[in-house]
Length: 377
Image (cartoon, rainbow, N blue to C red; front, side, top):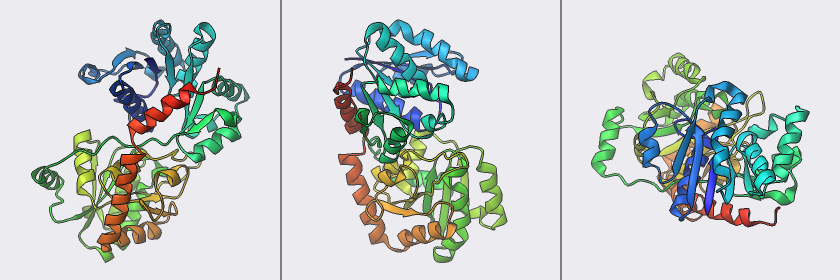
């Protein structure tokens, strides 16, 4: 089958939607499908694109804001005639293109739902009506969590169109002991018990809450270190908070790392933590891919009880859920996992089994293709 994936989010852009676009495209190719991705142009991406198992077409104009739709449409439209299916990972871009392709050529398309990307248009009658039409005419609407499904239904998407399919993680990488020793040495973690967080520094992600939890964690586990991987607008506050609390030496901010380095840190850490919550605009995590990624390495996770995270982390089974914004709750949950190795091992192993059987991109893509067959138009 020839699958077309027009997207506004794709590497080197960071974030969950970019990960979905990349991993689904790779999984489709692995299943034997002919995949073309139409993605924003960024300099020096030629080597990355050449190494992908899919054909990548780049369009310029990403910095134009909403007007980027037009160069995206121009780059995508010549590919529409040969496509058997269009995957609209962004409803406001690929979804509109899918709607146009269906009307012009009868090409079926599938739309995706995460959370804020459609909910933010609830008070914009014109855009809301357009997106409802795009969702309603798609073969299926893939919701990445039950929280997202509820949001889609409240937005006005026909319930019969919606399929809840959880995304997940790529397989864990294997590391030799000397490789893990090298990553510990690089980040000066030789004798430390590592707590890891990976994600863009947005206020709702909970990085500052983790820093505020560190004094209480260190009372219980003096050789604990917190490694916060990523960049973003909340980074400065997190650094300043660590200094103010006197824990700066126990909190590492390595910035953006390579996939290989992040994977090695997943393998190195004892606990993965990100107490995600809701921001002032109502934006939350639609799922939380990083929790599945940590579970893939057999690591227990601590997450904020919000949005679709409750689907990504099964409380008491694959990790522990805490109230967002509560550093004492985060400290107690993390501390309990550092203190009770058997509990940490059990939750981590449960999480790994769940990733292997359910929360992985092969299963996600197979279920996506099943939904695409649907009973839609």
